[in-house]
View 1 (cartoon, rainbow, N blue to C red):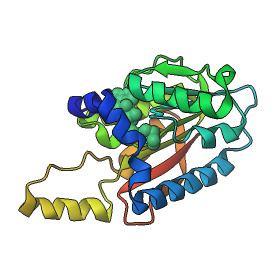
View 2 (view 1 turned 90 degrees about the vertical axis):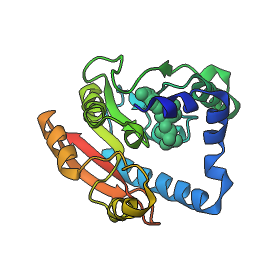
View 3 (view 1 turned 120 degrees about the vertical axis):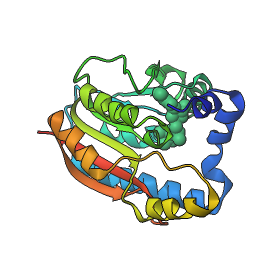
View 4 (view 1 turned 180 degrees about the horizontal axis):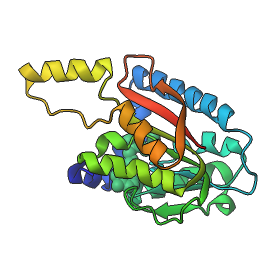
Length: 220
Ligand SMILES: C[S@@+](CC[C@H](N)C(=O)[O-])C[C@H]1O[C@@H](n2cnc3c(N)ncnc32)[C@H](O)[C@@H]1O
């Protein structure tokens, strides 16, 4: 994980900034709505799930995607490394659903999940992989998601082969920006297969020229 990015999310200012990210500009609002519709579509493939199972949303941030994940109809555990974002998620949840409904919050790192193998029926990890600087840790993040899932994993990563990434790489010759922290689709499939999963569906995160891929994997 990039220490600076992590520290930013774990600060009051950084958390507050993320809290309002999807309200600031119309393109973010459009992307957010599109992403939520996309996740609902993936969840249709996942349903029905074992009614006695649990879902994990990690990192949950301020719980942006919680209302969608809970449509699966099973309890959702919300996890993140950032205390202020977990607190924001709890506050939003309490205001919306009442204090009595707030119980499933865990502070955890996605790189060493504090859960046993197969603890969850469904695992979601959105918008984290591209913040992980070390390539081996990006793969480890995916391995951890697969390890704790009994059935399904939905996760995002920045795709090395995307047009957006290729254009970014081209631009780097002139603007000196750093390379994006990516995975290849092949790497995702290979790590998935090694853990007994196969890719069932995938889609770009936004219609507006995205390099982020959502990938749904199912245990064989
Ligand atoms: C871009 S936000 C995404 C949050 C949420 N998934 C969403 O889509 O709104 C990235 C989140 O990753 C969390 N995070 C960063 N590094 C982490 C780590 N190693 N383990 C767990 N959470 C981490 C941050 O605190 C932040 O909430």
